[in-house]
Length: 311
Image 1 (cartoon, rainbow, N blue to C red):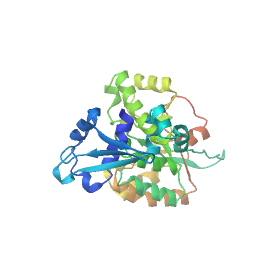
Image 2 (image 1 turned 135 degrees about the vertical axis):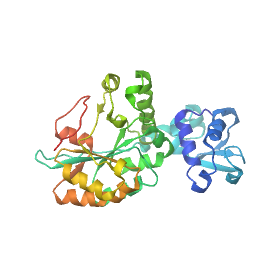
Image 3 (image 1 turned 90 degrees about the vertical axis):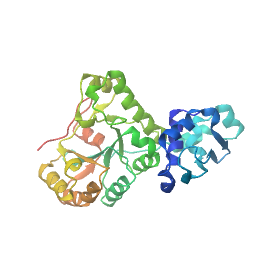
């Protein structure tokens, strides 16, 4: 069995699904076990790919010997065509079914719109809370995901997409891109694009450089790949103050129609603040759209950078 980076990410994600087992897994041992592909113990049928791990192979003895199962529809893209034919697996049909279809809203020229954005996720403890609150208020948002997080939590990536939110690229590991060369910048963004596309069929069209730091190399990357650089006009400072009341205060005083609001779906205090944020903004007549919808409404297109409307 040939294991490429995307399939390896699916395997790793399944290993960590069991929280009790996950605390005994040693990441470097797991990487080593999957690196030697000839030694991987596996079986496959029409329903699942099963990977077997011996006791002590990838972690402490408390993890025990265990196996994981990955549904065949998640690995169809990686199957050899001849093998798929012998197993009577319709790869193209499965892959097509896995692609998530999203629709854009038609916005009124005189509407009162803002874009909520969340960086650095997805996070298993915070992102689901954010999604539940957004659903309660019928609000759409844009999630600027890290590739390192998308790799470990592909089911959350899929959940965000299925609930109609926009998926965007925040690099792989959150470096200051101005300190990297062009090749390294490409690797950062391409890694995240590949992780998101592998589980949703969606290739992000928006990038947000970590810390809002960009230079000519970042701009050139956006130009070459037909993407837009997105910054923000309202910084909630949720990453700094970790205080729901202060988050609400900042957003209330700085928001204006056409704003792009920066938050993070990795801090519990952001999830705590969000219900009041949405209640207030809705009471002021605001409607919540994705960044791409906001750009189209403002008739802004191209590389950018775009920051949204400032007060």
